[in-house]
Length: 192
Image 1: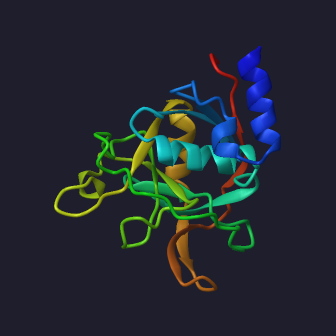
Image 2: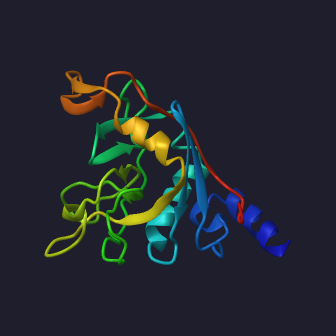
Image 3: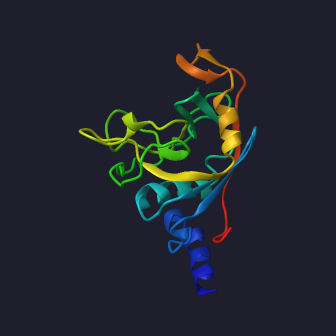
C-alpha cells in the first residue's frame, strides 16, 4: 500500500519517470492500434534511462492518437512522433544512448529512434521486424533496445505489410497509404 501511495504522490508531482513504480523492473505497456493490440515488456534492468523516458510519454498520454509513419517490411515499424496530419508531437529532453546494454535489435524488439548523433533519442520508437544487426553498436553507437513484444506479434506483422508510398508533403518514403494509428499506449499494472 505504501508503494501505491508514494507512486500516486509522485505522479501528481509530474515526475513521471519516478511515478511508474521503480521497483517494477519489467513493466508492460499495452498498445491499442487501429489494427489490433500489442503488448510489450520493457527491460528496466538493462535500459533504465530509456524505459523511464518511454514510460513518461506513456503515462502522460503523449503516444495516444499518433501514427506509425515509417513502415518497411522486414526492417522496422516506426512511430510515436506524429499525429495523422503529420503534425510533430511535443519533444522532451534527448536521452543518453543505452545501445551498449547487451540487448540486440532482433525481430520483435522495441528500440528508440534517434538522429545520426548518438544521444538524440527522444520520443520516437520502432519495432524491429528482422534481426537488424546493423542497428546494434559496434565501432559506432547503435539504437537502444529496451524491450520486446510479448503479445500481438501477428498485429505487428500485419502493420509491417500495409501498402506504403512516398509522401510528398513530408518528402518521406515508406509512409503507409492509409494511416495506422496508435490509439492508446497504457502502462499495465504490475503483475499483468
